[in-house]
Length: 175
Image (cartoon, rainbow, N blue to C red; front, side, top):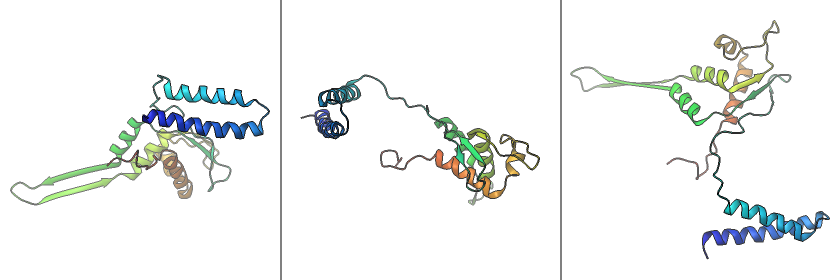
């Protein structure tokens, strides 16, 4: 039996078990549950629909801040192109040598401040954070980001990182 056949058989067995459980909980007939399940499984297995590979659900819910209980942020997920742009901003590597010498010099510059400013300006889409004069902070302005309390800034940065983290599973990990 082919792999598709085994997968379909496994889905059918799981479906039968689920249908029996649902039948015990709902007054719906077993036959209608089974038909609906088969329709859904066969649609998933045999449809010619192409999988969507672009970011579609990219906005987080309102994330309440622990360091500022009445404050919140809403962040969005990066696209792959933005991740590449962010990575390019993050590090700068220069290498050089003096003429006639075998000595090489290298410099690695990790630009965390630029990355944090990029994150705040591009990925925070809504917030309710103000300054002492009740003026809404503009995260596209580096001065406003730099004025944030350190604990609030770190928490927002962590929210951005957590929302944009990629799961390190064997299927996703690059080798």
